[in-house]
Image (cartoon, rainbow, N blue to C red):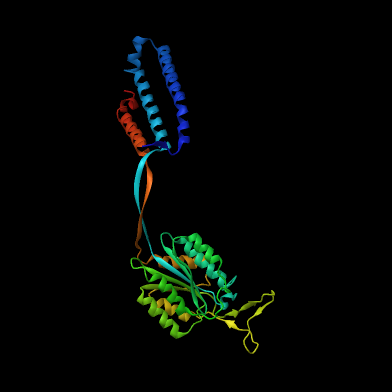
Length: 337
């Protein structure tokens, strides 16, 4: 078995030991000389009582030993291998994000799409042992990231989301919930949730279908509405760089409004909650995270790590024990008896 110190730099403090020994001997000589100057040897016992300078040396030696033990404790001696069990508890979360063209609307700055990405990222930043996956949808739904603990990868996927990823336009929430449910359906030992971020433009039949699918898979939906009731035009940018607002067949500018009734129904139908995306992203993320935290977290996996055994506690414990013993056996000196 090999031995080593984790923080070897602390051992340089041991160079102070010769100084401490020199200081102890110096003080011993100084005290002895002062006592001899003050009174004859025959009178020293009458004046100072049973004064033992050898006890002064012993006490200081114990203090030096305590110092050495504390230095070794700080350096943290390592040796041998210790097996540790690591349990991961959490829930599985599917982030279902609307990437339809209406998410380009700027009634929420900088846009619904950018705000959706920011909120999702802020929620992920608060998670710990939970697994996350990402599903995007417009007229169709696609799984872009399966369940994983890799939040760094999830952030990269979020940053790359745009409304140009899916050519089939629309807001097919039902298909998105089906796609997310398929990802979560094989998980039986933990709570499952969908964080749905959309402007909610969908049809009644689709909502009922989505609720039914989520219920069958024991999935709770937390929906976030992106947009405002007043609505905003939809920016359209062409390859030439020219941009304008989307127009209908009559040449009138199309306004897209938040349809949160469907989002609220999805949340209430699965015992989840609805949140207003127009609030500050940090506030929305905190509210969603608090709601996710109410779900039961179960043990999802057990792994083992092998680390070197640490022995700092033996040195610090011995130093503390010596200090207590010296203090208790030296009480008379405190009263000059």
